[in-house]
Image 1 (cartoon, chains in turn purple, blue, brown):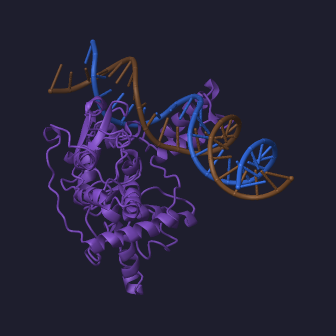
Image 2: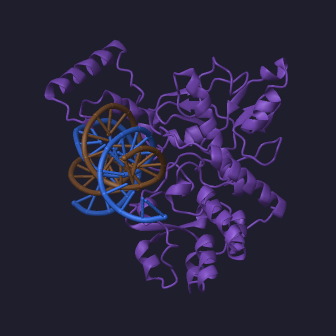
Length: 358
DNA sequence: GCCTTCTAGAAGACCACAGTACGAT
DNA sequence: ACATCGTACTGTGGTCTTCTAGAAG
């Protein structure tokens, strides 16, 4: 079962730590798999390829597994609102009895254009009933992927890149762009290079008690990670995810903290023991960097901050919950009884079938 | 130009509760 | 080693309150 509060996208299922890149452009992470072409495609390439002609538009595609991001999704878990490949589905839903009761349905293939197909109800992410919103939902998903592709080979997706306080994605680029313009290029280009090289292998992150960080004299104020937002777990396996109180730990990507320390002070003694060195492939040229910064700037102009629903079941509960002046109110005993009766009635009507969580 | 007041919009807080992980037993 | 229980934590939406930026005097 996916632990709530952790980002299930891009986490674990697969032994690999990289999402598959688009077979066409080789730069953006793929989001769909085209059976006809036997190709993994990013959103833009998918749109381009499958809008080329009528035949191509009929190609059936499926979303890429949200867990491993490396295999075509085979099932849609309605409880988790996640598209999963067979392997990840088996892993996740065999983790415990509750997870095994999740209502899953086979993934329906996508045909036509992802962006304009009005009849298609997105199997991926969260289902929107309003057709006009579907494009927006897809755009947001696309945004996440694209943002992740600006600089990092495979950053953590979703909120983690912000919540962890890492210099990931926007924040990192903000600093980068700022520093490029303020003459600190060298310092941050060093960090940049490390970030570029930074492989988001789960093991690369160390969950360290904040006290340890605070005890380090080299941990500069202003550079410390926002531990109040850093509550996330990442152990490479959904079913084995670790929940850590955000008040107790800071999550420190080794390369980042050591490199920042290098920029402002000496590297902490002994950190190499805590955080072993990482394998860091380097493949981006300055031109690539520039292009990605430009893409980032363009994207920043148009980016959206709309709320994303991660748990549809909670949304459903919240919408049915009684309120007083907008605040959730306690259910009266009568309401509770009615609910009980309704659930009992429904239970009898379907012969005791276990309902999905939404 | 500077200050004060007003206004509109944005952002955050608040609430109850289901679901989950984890430690203790 | 396994099961059970209690605790802590998270996320969800509508409304209200507080904050902030801009306009007007």
